[in-house]
Amino acid sequence: MSFSIPYEIAATRPLRQTTREEREMALERACFNTELLPQELIYVDLKTDSGVSSVSTSQLAASMGGASLEATPEMAPESHTAFNALARRFQEITGFPHVLPCTQGRAAERVWTKLHVKEGTVVAGNMLFPSTRFHVESNRAKVVDVIADKAYELFSDEPFKGNIDIGKLESAVKEHGADKVSCIYVELCVNSCGGHPVSLANLREVRAAANAHKIPLFLDACRILENSHLIQQREPGCQDRSIQEIVRETCSLADGCTMSALKDFLVPLGGFIGMRDEKLYQKAYFQQFLEGGQPPSGALASLSASLDEIFSPSNYVRSRVEQVTYLWQKLSGSVPVLHPAGGHGVFLDARSFLPGLAPEKHPAEALAAFIYAISGVRVTKGPPLTQHQTARGIELLRLAVPARRYLNGHLDDVAEAVLYAHLHRDEIRGFKRLDKPGRSKYDPPLFAPIT
Image 1 (cartoon, helix red, strand yellow):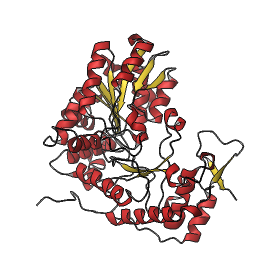
Image 2 (tube, helix red, strand yellow):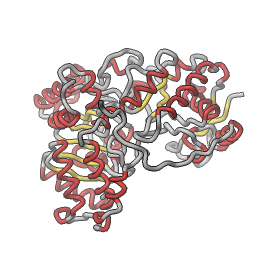
Image 3 (cartoon, helix red, strand yellow):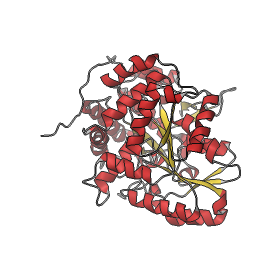
Image 4 (cartoon, rainbow, N blue to C red):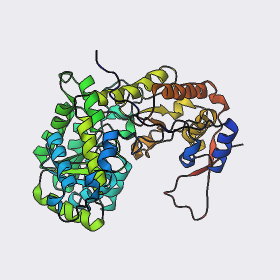
């Protein structure tokens, strides 16, 4: 008999029972944007799985142990115990000979783009995360989307919707010229299209194309564990391979990677740049030192403990993805959820959920507010969609499930709230956007119900 849950809950946080009146007042104060709701008034929070998963007793002990008394590595990493221990473990797992720990994924992307993305060039990618696109464009380069068209088919059962379309990739190289393509950048378990994975077979094809044109290939590997689990489940010939083996081969096909550790590696602070070129590593380390983006020693020790736990003989990754699948199965067939199940969250098609609400009436935000009002469950739109998605009229609501934080009973309550909202969808009114002088375009938008 194998244990279905590879951990026990060692600490809890009490939740206060709120009334619908309290929640409706909270929505009004938050201008009906669920992102702005206070944490103490939320029952189950599915806003994000980034940096909010439950830490383990080993991580807590490591973060408060002797390593936490070390100074930040600064310019002497060779003498730093926590840095070296983490680097060795990361090298063993991924095979990248050089690793640069960062405070988070955005910090890793900032350093990476300064080294690899040249002004006037393009980066070919598969629906890259908004922060990645921002850093590329900040370097006066352009992102070219070469994801396969299956990514836009919300309800097809294609198992690897994150795959690169090799024909689109070749066309992009031909159009811009290989010397004008800074790199190919592949996100694993693509967030924007529903957390869908990239297959090893596709990565091998991308690697071959990159070699033929002498273009570097990099990974956004923040969800590499989920991607590896879905490869194990769905890709022929991989069922008997371990997660560690799949992770190692995935990394072997790339010249480097950036990674936020806040998702798959269960920490509130941390990230990585993995690379093969020693000279680039030295440049990256110095760039990070100048920017002040080095994580403290306690965070490095906590990351090491997390890597040891995740890659020890356990079924943690399986249990994490299966909990997401559990929620998906509760909803699939009754409400319009994206198919197949993803790795970190369940995505609702807001346009199909509320066909009577035009896009200018913000159906996703209206649905999120209704779900919160009836249940105390917070969901949000997640990351902004790409231009190709918005051009197709796609509007998604994401239910991101933090790892090790909720029981299936919590997810039963989430499913009940979503099913209730679908049954009473005719009661959901649309929103109008409010303009507030002095408010930045990057701030969360404010809304009011349409009367």
